Structures are given as structure tokens and as C-alpha cells.
Amino acid sequence: MWEDRLRAGWLAPSGGFAALLGSTSRIPPLPLPGIGGALLLDPLNLQTLASAPVPASARGALDLPIPADPLLVGLQYHLQLAWLSGASLSFGGNAQTLVVR
Image (tube, rainbow, N blue to C red; front, side, top):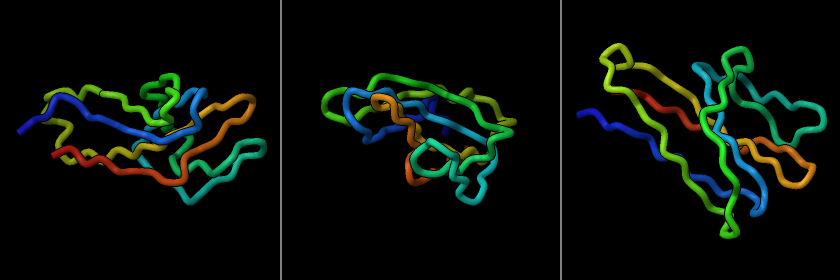
């Protein structure tokens, strides 16, 4: 059965800005100078899927559409959060894998 959306939730410093990153492949942790945490997604396939301000509760969620396309069955897609708080940019500490079935 097809779902028409993916809900991605996060916990990030309030008052900042969060972005959900996606890629078709993962890499070993890649620290980048001046950025907190490490990038876990392949930078050559990296996409920004959605972004939003982080509310005062520090919790947020984004809904992303998934097309009802049979060619997507079996696709593995990896997600990681990044956030900007003040002048600080950081990557989330984990990456989740979505498998379309």
C-alpha cells in the first residue's frame, strides 16, 4: 500500500533553522572544518529536501510527498538533519534510511 508522504521529525536548538538533507548513499563520518558534527551522506548526491525554522519547543516535523511511482520500489534513500543556530552550523548525529516498498 502506498503512503503519500513521509513525516520527518527532529529535535534541534530552538530559534534556529533546520534543513532535512537526503542522498542515495551514505559515507563514513566526514567532519568539515567550521561545522559541528559530521556529514554522513554522500556530498556528490546531497539534496536539501525541506527546511523550516525551529520552534521554541525545539521539536519540529516536515511532511515530504512520496510519489506513487512503481519505479521507486526498492529505493533506499538516506536522511540527515542539519541546523543553523546563531552563527553555528551543525549536522545531526545520525542518518536514517528510508526504503520504499
